[in-house]
Length: 325
View: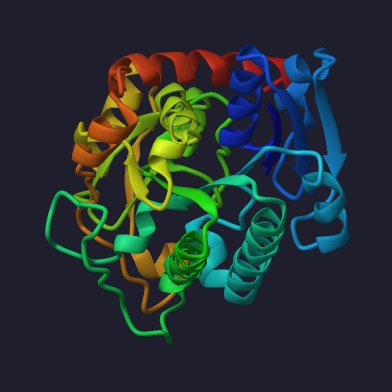
């Protein structure tokens, strides 16, 4: 098939592009390179079935031209990261909602399939664990910018389901803490990458709050396989949790990464207010119920946390060596 991947030069997107090419599809990658990295697509660019387009999903005229030739769109382009939500909520809200609306309008017009990348963030502070796809959303006050990403993604999902009722073939995948090679290690990226890079440099591993927050980390290979599984029509009109059921506290994750890297890094605890400013809120536990994903997508994450961390550490070691660090 002819497939468009928005945000295809990013962490998850670049792995998805490679996998689609391995399956024999023709792939167009659209990325504005605000957070993408062309080197992530080195393997893809050697394939004559891959095309790279520089641009934004907010450019409706560009999207119209691209989508006229495609059968499926994987919409991964997004403004994400907790740091972004508290520093620039307008960027997060506009960047996510406007692009998604364009994708869905054009896909509906062209009778295409859409796989929309959402997030476990939308469940907010719900204390009913694990999260089923139809669970209630529990969020803080709108004045607390922490929740703007969850809100923007939820509106995106509302748009998806509204178009599904009109006949659009669309599926939603909700990612739970994807990690692995190519993950961003800055304050705007994921905690696994941030911990690994600090550990390899023997710098402090900064754990926010008391580190008791529990998360389920999903290796990128499992994330991509779950995403691909949502491409079929059997998944239309539904949302699916894509994650791991292995739960770990953030402070334990820091110790595990320190042990696996043989690092001398100290583990330090940083108050939320210091990291993100006053009024920051977080959820104590985030864990997926995979019943629907297993039943319909036949999704079964297979990479253990330890195995995934080891592969990630090796990638970061090579990356840092290439950068002369």
